[in-house]
Amino acid sequence: MSQLAINGGAAAYAAGELNRNIPQFKWPIYTEEDENAVLQVMRDRMMSGSEITKKFEKAYAEYIGSDYVLGYCSGTASLSAAMWACGVGAGDEVIAPSLTYWATCAGAISLGAAVNFADIDPETLCIDPKDIEHRIGPNTKAIIVVHYLGHPADMDAIMAIARKHNVKVIEDASHSHGAMYKGRMTGSIGDITGQSMMTGKSFALGEAGVICTNDRYLYERCISYGHYERTGVANNFNSSERFITDPELVHFAGIPIGGRKDRMNQWCSALGLVQLKYFPERVAKIEEAMQYFCDGLDTLPGLRAHRPAKDSGLTKGAWYSSACHYDPEALDGLPVEKFIAAVQAENGNIGKLSNYALHTHPVFNEADVFHQGKPTALAFGQRDVRQGKGALPVAEATPSRAFVFPRITFLDKPFIDRFVDMLAKVIKNRGELLK
Image (cartoon, rainbow, N blue to C red; front, side, top):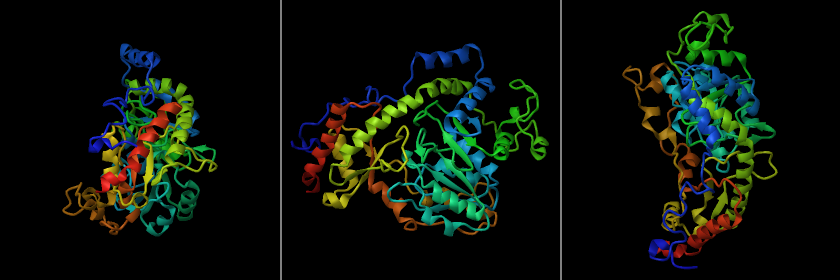
């Protein structure tokens, strides 16, 4: 193999050759049908309201396998509502994986609750069930599960722990659109799910989200928290159709208990109706391409694809932000940062894992959200569950033991083989990087 480009050799790809708009990488896939759906909302001046959104909710509920779906302005809003619906409030705790995006659990702070972070499983990169049960205390209200980078978490073990201790399970399925867990779709297994549908996600509607649940009570609590127009009071965007029946919640009809307006705008829901028509077919094509790609990765020393075993009944759906495990010890101690830099010099588009261990961030340890003169994590009488550096070794180490690479949207074997050959070139010539 030739000299590495980072040291003056010829690059494997021309500059810009692997740009995000080539057919193999282009995502999301939008067509004239999508454009017309969005334009029609504008022409009808129906950006607000919920008529189209209700149709999308029904379609998405059928797709994911949940009784109830409620559209949101963002995944962050949906997860905050899910926490409130599950009874999370001042002085309470939630358990969440440390390695995830902050929106998974930061809403707990705004509710006056603390986050008790758990470590992750080194293979799945999802919350480790073995690190959950000992964290449950008298004020633990929910376990938040992230299907990290599309890999389903161990839901059987997690649900068993939750049922034993009578706590709720909130799924953050923002990474796992279309992913399956033993015959069920991720996002349909826990008590309630929050799910982002922003542009960077696999099911991409711009800025949007949903909650999914089979629990009518949780669904009604979500409505009452941030969807004033569905509480039964007639308004410009809804008739007096009643979506909540619980007398306690009906009492507050007309004004959201959370003081929020979280509804999905109907550009997003119109787009969602079109995207959903083609999403299963697109997921199948991605699965075929990515399994072939990962088979190639697994032939290279020091690399191991982040994916479920093929006979496990688990899939990664649309393969959000695909990752590869990286073993520096198998590559003579080559740090992942140097490996990534060398691949990028070949004009290959891989990158660092974008998330980091949240338990070390000052927001969860020091922020005084309510101006009480003490960290909100302690301000309402919570036990101190804060943790410093070194407490969760797998979550802290993972960014140095993984990298991410782009989703390939359809099977193109020569294209994939060439990409794997580029990675092999860097690995074979790693001695140049270790000098």
